[in-house]
Image (cartoon, rainbow, N blue to C red):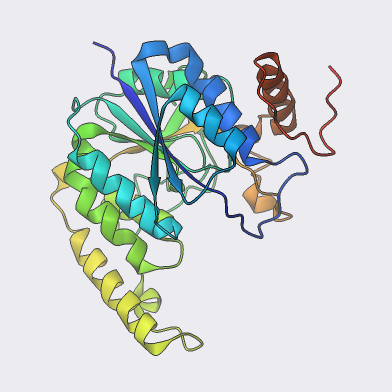
Length: 314
């Protein structure tokens, strides 16, 4: 029996100051998710979790394609903790997949079908990433994680394939990821504690789940430029999380990442290490995906802001 996919899409009207491509919009991000999930039909469902008010046109689009739930979270940390607690409490099959999604990602059209192909192909994998090219060196000794020098599946001639991607042991991803129902129920406590560690807590979460120590000694020291109380609280949380990674080996999770990346966090960076030009995981033309998504949406009467780029001429 094929696993069922439940997408939990967290959204808010608030924007941050991250550099975005000119065509960026949250409506474009939403349309790309709808496009990617459409081939799954009844094997998938979407719950939209909205923190605060959402513009009427986007809200209507959500209501037409899933269920909508309003919360007053006030922060990414709070909304993440809320959805994890709720999804862990819901009844579902152990192999069913929950995809936690943020609202500023662009999806390739085969992202969700490839995710489900991987869920069937790798029954022992608990977590899945469609974004992130840092590759974990699983042969390195010790409790601290080690990155491979190459990214994605580069240098891995026997990397398994499923759907439209090859797969590798992923070092870390963001708070947009997939998890099996059984693992979610067992890991909910850890997932809900990790945001209190501050900093890049999504990366720390991925490492802790895989049985690695996410923090070194320097990470446990207070920030000299920060609040003393906040720094002390963060340090206590990091010490506690570090201790919790000594779980029995059977609880060490596997996180598989896709190569190429099948979703893109719509941010523009000048740092070449963020684009991984030497890796096949950077092979997707996201400008072209944006154009195709806009046309897909237009064909269905979905108004998507186009910005000044990319060109919308076919």
